[in-house]
Length: 402
Image 1 (tube, rainbow, N blue to C red):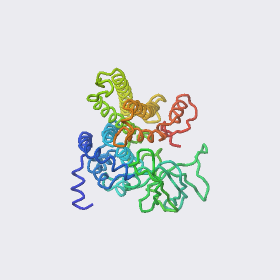
Image 2: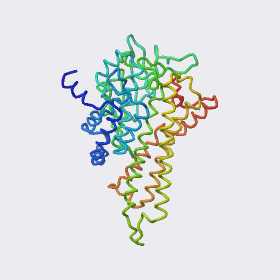
Image 3: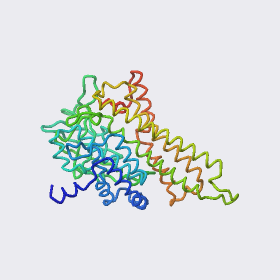
Image 4: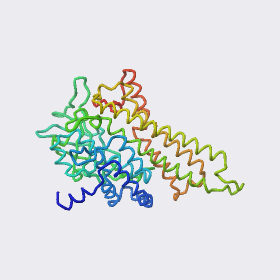
């Protein structure tokens, strides 16, 4: 790293308070550029640099590697503020900061080699859509992944795969295929411009493909085997805990927008102020009630789990109730945020449907966001199955990594 690069890195906020303040300071500019970001269908390069400079990508890095070591609740709060400014930017910040969380599963020497600065971002998928053939020193990786959020600006691209030996899937003692995540340089990845989406248009969530690329063993990991840290951020669900920050931020933005409109709007037919209209008052009050309920539930569950893990309890020692709480409330935040924005959209009626209105974008962003697995019924099924000792259809939701 050059002297200039070290000086620039040292100027990046490196505490929860400072990163949150830096993100909030970006709100006016990001809001002003929301239309541009959406039309661009990916984050502009200078917006990515704004996120780096605000410390967004370093949030998951341990102090050992120059990061701020933020708790899951602190990460969630920053992402909430970022999504309040622009939902696509918040989504990319949420994905990009996984770089530090992935590092829990890499050896310290590998972290320092791959991430010489904590302000490097990741993008892509951990789903095992590829095949990784074992070869001396690593794997030959091939596959095709879709919905690769952040791949247009990522420093490393994640690619989940099932590993193979001599063409046959590797399996554990229970017959489950071996799942591993491989980190690949962007230059080894082919981006496929498929991202013409209803919402989150600015997230650059392109398809991508890898064809017979060698990936060194040390650039791969399993969520079941932390190698460079212990504690709450060495647990496999750390990736999911901060995700509700994005829908919460979008819902808060919509609530504040409609509240501001309602303060001054007058019904042209009756001359009645919206601030005095029962329907307007009830809708805003009900949506605010729902928002506060789900927000406090999300943060409370994240903080409860953090305290349990920080006390020395191993993730596998958590009770089923402790394991499912955060993911169920995260799922509720995704769906609840969409419900709030849909009701506010209906309240503004025709004023919502024109593109200059941010309500249109918030509704489309949340509709698209709720197609993510985190908002799907399989989360609820997996939690219920875990509570009953049954078989979750999406085991990773409850921290099962096989």
